[in-house]
Image 1 (cartoon, rainbow, N blue to C red):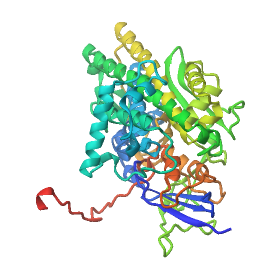
Image 2: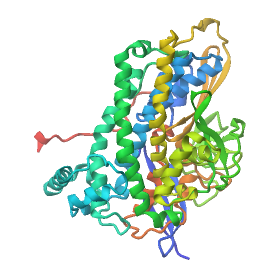
Image 3: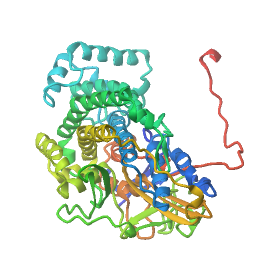
Amino acid sequence: MSTKKIVIDPITRIEGHLRAEVEVDENGVVQEAYVSGQLFRGIEIILKGRDPRDAGLLAGRICGVCTNSHFRAAVSSVEDAYSLKLPNNAEIIRDLMAMALFIQDHVVHFYHLHSFDFVDVTSALQADAKLASKEAHKYHRKPFRNSHAHYEEVLQKVGNFVKAGKLGPFSNGYWGHVEYKLTPEQNLILISHYLEALKFQTNISKAVAIFGGKTPHPQSIIVGGVTSVADMLNPQRLNDYLFIMKEAKEFVERAYLPDAKLQSIAYRDDIKAGIGRANGNFLSVGGYEFEAKQRLFCNGVIYAHDFEHIEEFDESKISEEIDRAWYSGETRENEVCYTDLNEDGSLKTAKNDDKYSWIKAPRYDGKTMETGPLATVLVSYSKGNNLIKSFVDEFLAETDLELIDLSTTVGRNSARAIESGYICEYIFKLVSRLIQNIKYYDTDTWVRYDFEKLQKNANGKAFLEVPRGVLSHFVNIKDAKIENYSVIAPTTWNATPKNFDGLRGAYEEALVGIKIQDTSKPLEVLRVLHSFDPCLACAVHVIDADANELSSYKIKTLFEG
């Protein structure tokens, strides 16, 4: 059987540089896939020799999107090393920042990073504004910004882009592709919400900044607690946060969730065919305690889509290999070992020991795992978390789907939407707890400690459930300085190379078996990969320690003609 190789490099609309090579047969069906992170990560090296109290400020720079997540994980790992117990208010404030980030991240992913894999912009220009308004009512009784005048305005705006020959954010799409299945009116609804989501993400960023000082790269999280005590005690600041979250809740309930339902119904055949399904191994570490020891998410491990038997998460079962990543030496102590590409520019993948990615290969009990909102929802629901059950049941009932159907390309989008609606419902309980603490004179946000009296040698770790999945930071402190540091990000789990075990990671497994209708326009590959919301910046980095010039660019201005 003859095969053809399709290369997409870089994958756009993600954070970082990702390359995909898929081998398809004469029918366009993917037989094998190789997904590669294309930049070297060196943040752990930068952290060596630093004061542990600076870990958050540096690790927070791992990514410009996931800043809050890495900042908190780094600080938490140091607190674990020193056995520091945080005041309740500090945990709540950190959680409030994290919850706002979850919602922002999921909305931005659905509309700005992934929607145009399903939405045909040119088709929307043929839409009838009145029919679009009627269509929107199928998914919510009070759809967001649902008026004839509004849809006419959107049509005019998109039409002006087209007439000017400059599509702007709508450029470089595979418009007219046979795999687009939405009607013109459905396309118009989602484009309308795409534009509204641009304003949404600006507003919700303010919610993070209220307690974080700024965003991205908040600076209020410190070893021992948080510094935003003045914001916590200011009623206006709390009201500002609540107002932003109420607006966010309205958008999620009236736009995001209905659009996810619209997409699930329109692409029902793809869902039922299992397109984009990986091996069914899911990992979640849970977290976010908010009331009577209840947690927003449950921890657990699912194997092979067996939702009846959920194992408890056991950190001792985690390993990280480098056999097929561009490193040499031991897992924790390794050196860069780049082997270059084949002469034709393709990845070296012919041999079982060829290295083809900067991403390391984490395993749980020797198996590859999928992590992210899909894993979180499946684990929490399957473990009987009553807080999330109604949200999942309602979504599945309204779309006529089953739990297994979430384990697909479109299903991952549904899981994110469900998680967002769930968070929006319970985030106000966290604020209520904070107000109750203040009311009864509990205003502590930091635990006092004497750094000079802390143990000089210690090891710490942190496991957090963040927007893209399980994030873990590990720190080894020697003579009061960071000796070694390690990060396993959600994308590291999902984009793992095969390693000597030959096991495909979630990205690669989800690609195998899909049919590409037009190999010159591999929209199907983009759909699968984008559904994971890849963040290669969390997995790979490059730095020139000698400050040498890596490359130079000239930007041509309009005034230069």
